Image (cartoon, rainbow, N blue to C red; front, side):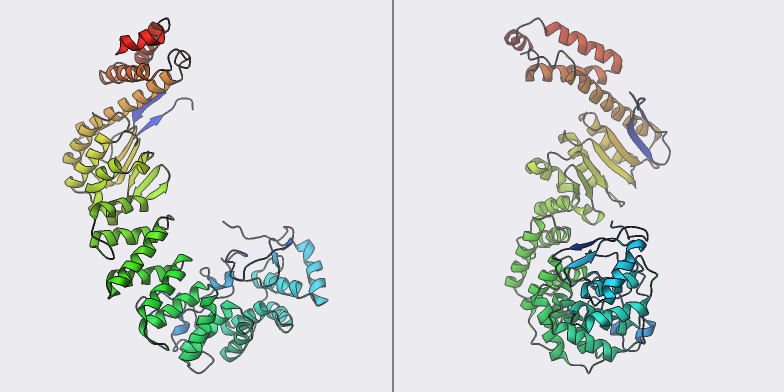
Length: 518
């Protein structure tokens, strides 16, 4: 095993080198499997969305207009809307209303599907329509897809009725006809399809194919929202927040945003945070929202954890506490159980990190600490140096996209001389003197040698015997290893010293060896 830094160029990477050493779209030709299932109506992962023929309808949020498609703009005809193939759409992923789903399609089994559909089997008709829509096992053909959706819809299948409405809305397999789209959405919505209820509500709100009717919009949004439809919950929350079609009620808006955000709706998450930071007028609203964020944050929901950083930093809904803000900043960056990636937006909290690691045992297993690209002040590096100095579990620090100055390098060197745990240290050394870069390289390689020598001792046959598996022996051995390698004795010579050290004690009863060591 050899230990060497890379050449000191613009980026210094010091590491150990050893001498010894989604969901995939179904393709034609695969088998068709029709599997009985009890799929919820809003299952979002039944079919691939990268070639979705159907876009979602979305109420444009006046405070945060993030709608991915322009139906809200009445000056833009539907035939000129953004291509529905450019990005996944949420509503299209809720596809199957029948107790069957297509998991993969093979051309050799399509004939059986067509035969079953032709005989009037509703599930087969729906699946055949989906196959034509997505080009699964069959050439994509919206006209034939619409034909089979209609056959299925006319037999009362709510989801097929919904998709007939969507195809009329977008002009897939037919001319754009918003009036027909609304009719089919209504048929589906009245059977309880929440996607249809949400989209019909939006059409009433925006006057698409129907007269503008905010009261009707609210009715349909409520129906879908009460059954957990995240999009409808968001839309209804906007209405309550702004008092459109309903009496203004920020408390109800918050509750709906929370329900939608909890399901992963990114717009609801953004709007909820905007309200929390700027728009809530009463202390009770702020406290209730803070408690909701706290509940979600404990589940490791990232947007909630980030909100708590701001809450504790600014004292919103809770007493201001910069240490707790730093705690949640660290939790937000927790990628794995042993890795943290600290966000640049939280760099102002770096100075509190050492005390957080000292006071919260849950971070004792952290082995890797990475920093996003950004500017670190000398004060920041002094805090990081303190963390390196005091923490003996972190093995890797990564500042690869952050340029160090000489003063920063001196702080790091001071810490590395005390902490022999750090075996990987990455940083941009462009502005650091070569001598300081080499000193850091030397210290990290020295730590790698210490790591290897400790591993050698731990796995030594004599250490594995019961006579020497003693904590005092281990501590004395590690002290000897560190002392020798910091004295620039080679790794091979240190290993020989380990052999002699253990051989010296192998014949001594454990009680006497402990007395000798003490």
